[in-house]
Image (tube, rainbow, N blue to C red; front, side, top):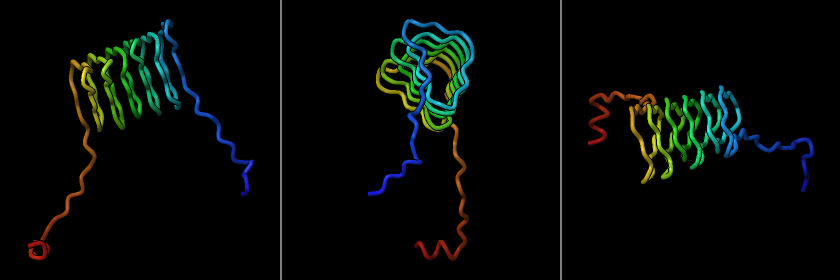
Length: 132
């Protein structure tokens, strides 16, 4: 077995706001973000933004995926998905391709599910005859 020593994978970095910490400002990151404490401000992430059960966020979040276990007040935009876990609560607006609210999760506000483009195939008389 040959080992490629040139290919060393670096562990994925995670930005963490620890429990007991309050932070105000703006976060922009290409790596996952995990909120365990309190954050006031906007988050713009290219990866996953996760809020833990005892956390709170007051501000807007835009990320590929948003997983909510804590309290959030603001506008959320998840390009792939938004999940409100059983301990999570959102007050505000959410927009995503996929929205999941677990039993016990709370949501109050406006919801917009974006649609991916659908290819329309026109069926002429000959195609319809073949299907019949």
